[in-house]
Length: 388
Length: 248
Image (cartoon, each protein chain N blue to C red):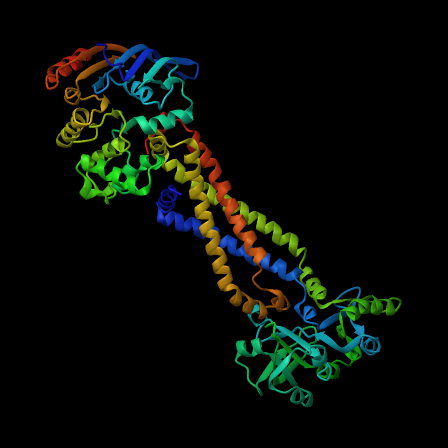
C-alpha cells in the first residue's frame, strides 16, 4: 500500500499520454460492450415469453420471401392452445428517402386481429376503432411518433418497392409497448390486396399468440406437421428465434462479432503495451536508482506492472460507466433502426460489463508484463549508465 | 589497544567485462581498506575503474573475483535480494546528476528509501524532515525537482542518501554538474556529514579541488591502485594537485 501513491504518480506522470492511452482503451472497450450486449440480446429470452405472452411465428419453410396461403390462418386458429392469430406482411418501401435514418418497420396487417396477438400494445392516442374504420388509417409506435413529430391525423406517405405503389396513410392511433420497442407502422393490408389482387389470399407470416408455455411448445411442431406435405410447408418458431433468424441472415453474426472483438483486444494490447514499454524505457535510469536505493526486483515489477494495470482498470471503469450511461441512447437508436426487434432485449448485462472489466485488467497485466520484467531484470549499472 | 577493523576491506579484487570475445580487465587484483569515518576521494583518468570500484563497494555490481567486506559483511557473495536489503540499510548514494524522481517532491524523494523500512508514516515523515533539515532545505520540501536549482537538487539527493542513516556514503562525481559555488557548498556539506555525523564517504571525482576536501586520496590507473595518500584535513590541495598532475 505504501507504493500506491508512487504508482499513481508514475501513471499520471505524462498526463496527456496517460489520458490518450485511457482513451485508446475506453473506445474499443465500448465497442466490445456494445457487441457483447448485441450478442446477449440475440440470445436472451424473449421478454414477452417470460411475461406470459407466448408468441409464435409461422413462415414458409424454404424462405422468408415465399408467401403462405392466408387460409392457413384459419386452420391454425382452430388448433387447441391458440388464443389469437393474425397475419403480418412486410411492406418495405421507403419513407422520405431510402436512407438508414428513415428506416423503420412497415407492416400490412389485419386491423381486426393484429392487436389480439400483440395484446401488450396499448393505444395511447387515438383508438383501434378509429384505425379499423379508416381503411387508409394506420397506427404508429410512440418512438416513431416522437422521432418524426407525428400527431393524430397526420399523413404519412410510403413509397413501395416490393409492392410498387404509393400509400397515403393517416395516423389514427399511437401505440406503446412496455419494452420500449414501439417503432413499427401498421396499416390495413387490404390496401395492398386491392392494388395487387394477386397478393390477396397470401400472407408473409402468420403470428400466433399461444395460451400458455405448454401450448407454445406444442404448437410449433404441430403446425409444421400439419402443413408438411402441402405445397407450402411451414416453419414455426418462437418470436425470439424468428428475430434471431432475421439477424442471422446477415451472416454468422456471433462469429463475426467475436472475431472483431478479438482483433480489438489485440489492437488495444499493442497500443497499451507500446505505451508501457515507452514509459518504462524513459525511466531506465530512475528504475536503476530505485534498485540502488534497495528496491527489490519484485517491487520494481510491482511498480511497473501496477502502473499498467492501474491505467487499464481506470480505462475499464470509464468504459463501463460510459456504456451504462449511453445504453438508453443506444437502445433508442436501435429502436429506430432496422434492427429494432433487438431492442426489447438490449439492456445492460452485468456479465458483459464483467467481461469488459476482466479484459481491461487482462490487457493491463499483459501490456505491462514485458516492460515490467525487463525493468526488473536490467542490471543497475547498465541502468545508471543509460542517458535518458 | 587494537585498532578498529576497517569499514571496507577489499582483497584481490578483479573486475572484468566481456565484449564479444574480448575480455576487458577494469580492476586488476586491487586491495584496499577504508576505515570507518574516513572521507576518501577516488581519482584517475576516464576508464581507470573509479566508478566500477565505487559500484562494487556499494553492492550494485559484482566482482569477477576477490572479496569485498563492508561493515563485517561480505557483499561480494550476497544474493541479489540480500544485497538490495543491505544497500537500503547501509549505503547512501549521491549521483552526479542527482537522479531525483521528477514526479515526487523533495520530501517524497527523501522519503523514498524509508518506504523500504518498517517505519510508520509519522516516523518516516520525522526522519525525512530531519534529513532535509541537515541539508538546510526544510523550506523547500514541497517543491518538485524542476523547481529547485542544481545545488538544491543535489542537497535533496544527499538528504535522500542519509535518510536511512547509513554508515557509508558513496558519491559519484557529486559536484560534476554544479558550478564552483554550489560545488563548494556540496563539498562543505559532505565534510560536515563526515565530521559531524561520522559518515564514511567514498567519492569519485575528476576535480582535484573536490578531492582536496577528502582526507585520503586514492588514485587509480587502468584498474590498478597507483597512489594512496593520507593527508591532514585542509592540507590536501597540493597533494591532490600533485597526484592529478602525475597522472597526466
